[in-house]
Image (cartoon, rainbow, N blue to C red):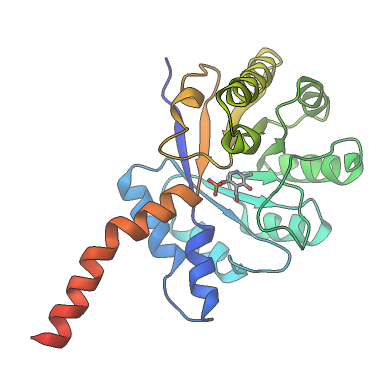
Length: 240
Ligand code: PXP
């Protein structure tokens, strides 16, 4: 089995910083530590409302990331211009709506055909690889290859949210079928959303998957495994 690349999504570090409009925690530091921990790429989402990652973050990430930089973005003219200026290694096109807490579903490639094709053509013309974040659906994979994207990122959110074993198996099979089709038609096979230390194993077992992008669960664990030490350091500092 070929090794799976691990992309770490650092958006939540920026979310904590933006809660205070402060300068810490800095997602740049988090990205460098993630690379030291074995991340194969750093993923971040520049949202139109700038609720977490800022333009400044993306600029500095481009300078300091030693692995690969994967920028998630909506297929808008403004975002395309930013990607052209920053030159990430990969752009992952995602649907975006202002009210959502996180990216809720995959792209509707029929509805957004024109904007997604414009993004693919413009970015790939200058050697920025484009992946499309899509639901685990075979027909959508076929559409993605027709649009000449380099890869698809299969949305694992429904799998992650499954409540029963039956539902879980159905959703995992959907992810697997979409991955198989993506590989068969020559697309890079990425997956992500909602993956955790508990639910990732059956996804890792899908041999076609080349890359997983994981954010929430890793950042959540980072807070917890660092909590005791952080408190001890402050307690020592004020008591000694
Ligand atoms: N992949 C894409 C395209 C995403 O939008 C996200 C969430 O920003 C992730 C992966 C990571 O999802 P999670 O934070 O649930 O691990």
